[in-house]
Image (cartoon, rainbow, N blue to C red; front, side, top):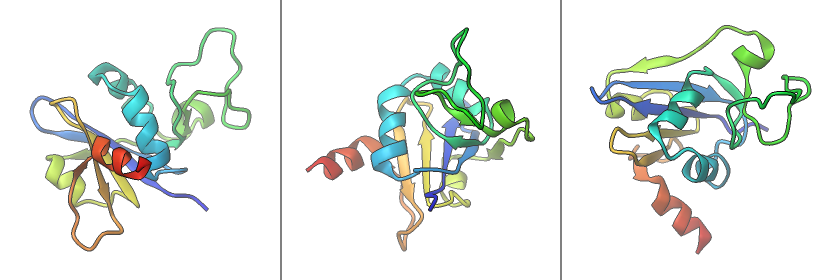
Length: 142
């Protein structure tokens, strides 16, 4: 069963853009991948530009000579609906980080802030609150 999530980025004006991710959205998987492999504005931008994705992985780009598509994905590469299955490009706009947090983040929402920090929101909680992803990962490791 899928654990759906949304992954977002805040720009310098405070606006946020997000994409859907179908698989493994929980912090110990997608959260860890984002925290460990998407630590720059440029790398997160390259992920968001793909539009909605089926599964997150540590690399966005397909290396030359590597076969990668939706039906036969290469190890370590994000599987994207638009690029890899030729579906419509879907990216949502939000007015702010708070707007994103209070939107339909699926089950988990992640936002890379303009300050360069990853925040996570768990939609299962009664009161939605963005928490530093780093702190969530540390607590899970204890």
